[in-house]
Length: 298
Image (tube, rainbow, N blue to C red; front, side):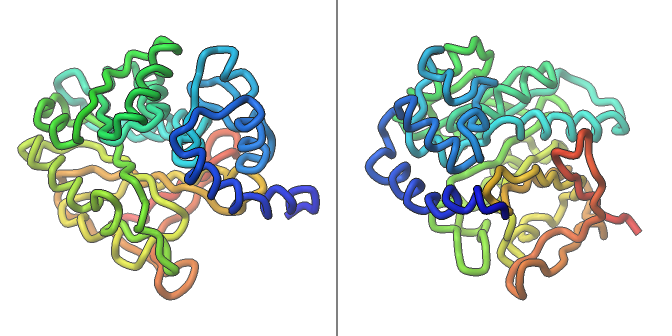
């Protein structure tokens, strides 16, 4: 880590506590957004949602809650996820029906907004928290997004959306909350638990195959990523370039849900004896900003 990055890195815990504490349900000022961008992303302009950097958000009518600044999927990660999906589908068999994107825990709506635009598909989303829903709805309207956001529990959204195509995409990003442990992120303790969410997706589709994108931190508790993988095939894991000054970041795991169990679904110990990640071969993607991990199929 460069010396110039150390103060920002040291300031992050205090910033996070403020954004998730007293500023949790408050809209951030431009100065606060720029501070968050500098500390979390290396510079103010790198905190970006809907293609709008932090210094321009207020002038363009974008209002970001304190907690959203921490919890949201920031640019350019959604576009990178869309690129991986396009790559996967390029070699997949043709599928009938108009495919859709379903964002079950919408939050800011940034990832659904970008996937819909990049993939040219309708996006259906749900957000149960009324404060987050209202803020997300307002921002999506301001940017002219076509995301159809409902103030609803994710199960209600699933119940209203039967399967359309085997290329339907479900975004699974529940609140991590108490799921953080010293060993990493425990997906059985997210709110709601990821295995429970996957079960509801399968039942809503009558087990018609689909693609599922699960976002995690860089460390996942042993076994919690594969507890629901009985009939899922791991296709790819996207490892976005971390925002400086941090050396770690999110992972986006892409699974084909509804297929037969494959020996490709494997894990390897990483970051200590109690954390696992899919065994993977790393391949540089695009401009080197992100890395993709592919499971060996032998």
